[in-house]
Length: 441
Image (cartoon, rainbow, N blue to C red):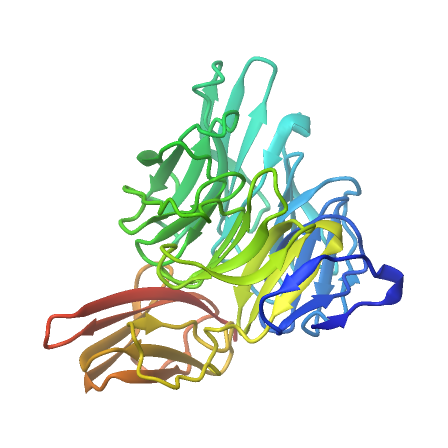
């Protein structure tokens, strides 16, 4: 295993490598790092305890500490919607924003009487629109709420607030994700009892109204990810890894050994990674699935380290955690460089590469039988941008190159786009899958 870490920050790491392409990077800090975000293969940010903000411009070879306007807060999550515009949410009711790649971070919002306020997640679909869920606890009450901004964090409004004076009835919001500027989901639970259910809220009008559409029994999920148009993954804390394939109405968990997902990072509806940590033990692993959690493959085994954040971007999988730990895995098994030596055994849609991109990107998919193919690209408003049709494609691996132009030959604007594939064979076999990509002009 190749280690890029200076002796001054060398610490004992009991890591058993399941593959030889894991690399430890020198973060330069020893605090717990909670989240990681990359906009391309070179530029990324990591946030953590003690108001730690780190940035790299060379794929992690060097990490530079950025200045924070606060000094003692634990920063929970970081998200960049472009190379320059980013947001951070934290405990203490604090939201930070930047418009110059983190050279200057500003306090976007701080909730009044914020000592008992906690933000653990946020979702920004562009430079203006974003949502942050949270909770506020008092001696004899609890409030769950969802905040919204439409002007890049200059102003915030409460879209939803649920007040309860009973511990068993309170609903604290832990995670929110939006598919586009209309449709989104949020998770809520009391978070006092590890076996309490998690309630799934949905909005179809930009958060103006929210309603409970589903309930995940006997597990407290704190993390939500959109893995496709109607496919959701949840996990977090002691939450079971669960999936929904109908937009959050019904949920499934597989009940196998690795049912606890402390961190999740889907590639699409069926493939992705989780961090598994068995309670009251040192059994901790990064696992990969290609069948939505029915089976898992061990990628990395740890004994002392705890992983708090995980993200796959372009050809890398990034993890961050305790003791200033930053690691990456290369290449991503879903990258364009993946070699197919045998005929595919299953239909599969891979991550586009590169992602994000500014000139062109390649989308790869596998067919197990001759099929008619329709690949469509949508913007976050659900509008069709570009479509590709191929008839009677043979079984095997195929690729489509998109140059950022719509069906009329004009370049689209920078932002998040969703692509999906429909495959129909004459024998009746059908395949549908979707994923996301980022276009940067």
